[in-house]
Image 1 (cartoon, rainbow, N blue to C red):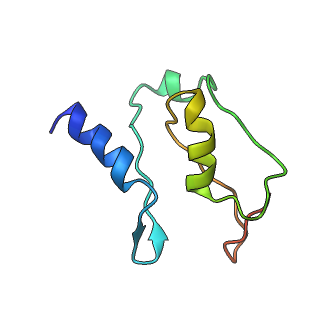
Image 2: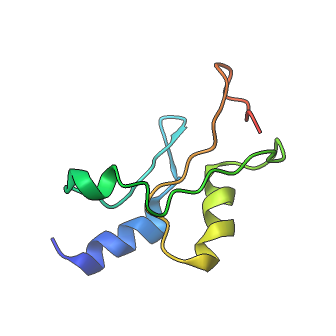
Length: 81
């Protein structure tokens, strides 16, 4: 396994449906101090109901590498905005 394969998987497979649910692929950060530092976290509110995980990721990817991206949803899978 190598970095190029991982990057290709991120680019081609992220957010594809697997058994009716979008698959999320992201880099793993093993250093707990970096994971808990809060550096780089962005919270977005008042999203249009039509914005999904892929749309949000695509929108912000122009600003840099997105490690993880998730739209908060209710128990019915509807965006909380």
